[in-house]
Image (spheres, rainbow, N blue to C red):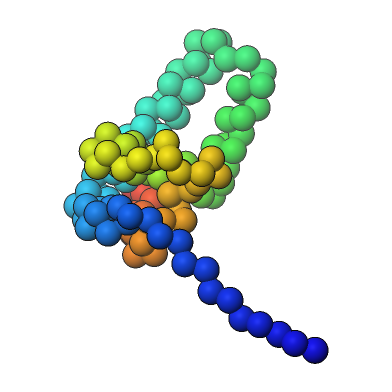
Length: 130
């Protein structure tokens, strides 16, 4: 029986620029904006419920925010996902990183530094206590 080991290295020419530009302050601002976006969406949904403007399907989707424990976890997850979308927008608009040249299955989680992902996760989690 023969075995082999292999290492795959992916070269992303702008990775260092991305890592250097995503400072703690930038990430805090991104997560703050994500929290505001999520809060606004929740408030709009609540308003739609109160005004009877919601379809039965939309109403059922709101149950994930109904139980306090579920609401906190769901909100943290929504803030995390919104933060990743805002990082993508930040890169596309501010750094001119060639996002359109990346594979279609590309994920910012795959190129962000682990420390940046950890910071976003921690900041997203801390939002559930606010």
